[in-house]
Image 1 (cartoon, rainbow, N blue to C red):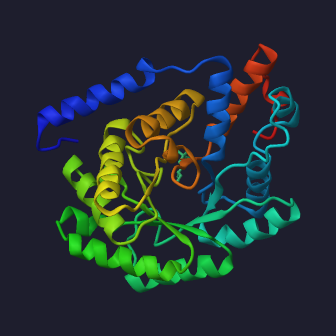
Image 2 (tube, helix red, strand yellow):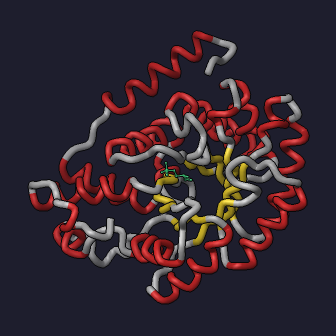
Image 3 (spheres, rainbow, N blue to C red):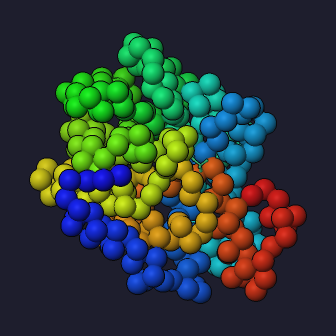
Length: 305
Ligand SMILES: O=C[C@H](O)COP(=O)(O)O
């Protein structure tokens, strides 16, 4: 991706290169950061072969993200640590409602909607999909923006659609997925971020996880700076959700550092920060296991990850 100003782009690259190195967290501080990361994870399954069975398992895991013995060793067994939400296709929302109830787990249900991931459907259908997901029990909706409009510079079109989606959500939180890997330039990422926030997004999210390039730090930096600018100008705090390809505990810490450095401590909690990930929890649990037991877990030792 190339922005108009190569100097700014070089600065962004330097800023993000330093993120994982300038500040590193180790030992008990790393364990604390990882537990914090867990509370911000939107534990996700978005597959064609999703069934009630794997969705139930996901829901249970979202409510019990770390094994009891590890939590006890960390003195955190009574802190009610859960993931930020579960994230599924609209057709699986009812499965989540049933599974969370059966497991006695209180975790929000996020549903992707609006013809995820491409969004190539009539607006009427996309809005109906949102309403149905909310009616079925989703309290958070992850929509995709219209990339055709964005690439053609039709920002009014993007704004109008997101605003209609905002309305269709009712009380549900709206996360707008920019699909930055398909936006073609940093300038478009910046404009799309602002347009979504102006249209009422509660969160802006990098990617669907299905693009060729998903959550990457240089692009995220543009988005979080747009959030900062929007906050400074309007007083509204908008959340940030990187998603797609986030797999390691180290990555999770780096994303938290980005939030701390660019937006401050308030953006280190689930109401303003989420990590969209299907496979991140395994590595986080492995690292916590290592911190507690001084060795890496065999897979059978953390079977629910
Ligand atoms: O919104 C979440 C993403 O689809 C998850 O992507 P991932 O499977 O690469 O973690």
